Amino acid sequence: MATSRRPGGHDLIAVGASVRAFACSAARAGWEVHAIDLFGDVDLQALAATTTVVTACDDLRYPQSLVLAAAGLPAAPWCYTGALENHPDVIAAIAARRPLLGATAAAVQAVRDHARLAEVLRAAGFDFPDTFTTPGHPPRDGTFLVKPRASAGGRGIAVWDRSAEDRDPDACVWQRRIAGESWAAAFVVSCAGDVRLWGASRQLVGCDWCHARPFAYCGSIDMPPTLLTPHIRASLERLGRTIAAAFAPLGLAGLVGLDLIIDSSGGLHVIEVNPRPTASMELVERATGESLAAVHVAACGGEPPHPPARCPQDVTWGKAVLFAADDVVVDAERAAGLQRACLPRTAHEAAWPVLADIPCTGTVIPAAAPLLTVFAAAAGRSAVLDRLRIRAAAIDAVVSASEPPRH
Image (cartoon, rainbow, N blue to C red; front, side):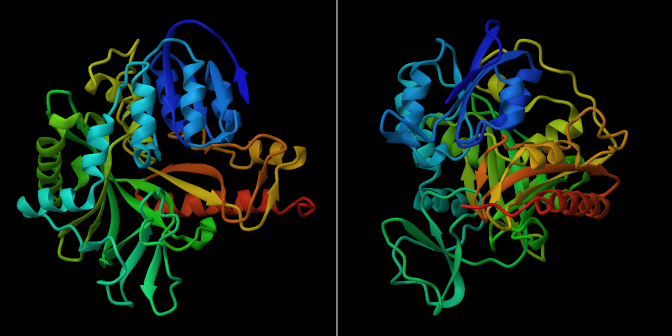
């Protein structure tokens, strides 16, 4: 399915499972965005020049259908979001036909290789949890997690214990479980290998008020680098230099995300590297006014049409990804209710939508699938969480107000 809003201007193609955040940022910086993703949500269609939904295309399913969809778009550069890091062959295929603004397929393969990443990090004095590619080594006593190799957003992760189902060893890895707080760091890596810490955030994982499954990513709270402790900031900056030195020569460029655990003593444990713009980075844009798309493209050697100026706010931003508690049909009544559920907004929030990834009328959302995203800004992390919870409850009320969906 494809929709068109307007032609012309500076064309940029955004490809991924969900490109709404990147596309919104790119449109704000002056690009005419051609979006390809799995959802084609209401707000994405409103801002993109064209929107293509790729659940299937010429008998091919995602992600191979992305290649065909991109081939029909204007001759313009392209960027990708999650979870294309799991499909370097798709990255290589699209990059063979149009300029890529982002990490190359070779860089993606290298930085997503657990053994190679562990070697780089440990040589620099950082911890990377013990990770195995077969179930024979890790004990089934709950000290390890089993994860899909091709994962995103924490889906499919489980505790590896006696109750865990056996998994296909060709499709999974087993990683030591680390106690601590889930964080994400955002780095800007230039084509020349220069790197800077662009942002950091605390991650929300498996929250019941989001109806999220255990280990599922369900949001972030922005933590500006200026507010980090000197120890954590220095450690993150050295971590960024380590990653850039090892992988920028292979083509790692643009915005790069790192998922990590920070333990009670302030120690950093790197879980994985996401070599592309990540879900938490739009909070940095809201907090600073700096376009994440413009930052990403400039780092890759491109030139944004007219990137917005920085305008830092003295406020903390947060987002929560809400999941469907039960099967949901977004009928006309629910669609209208979602559009007005989170008003009024505070003065800090006035310039930004507080709902995103809004499903189209007629969409059927299975239980445990993403429903939509809600944002909040307030003075401090606790106040942001409170506001997110209130808005999540408002969404629950809208979704449960109509008759239950019939199959």
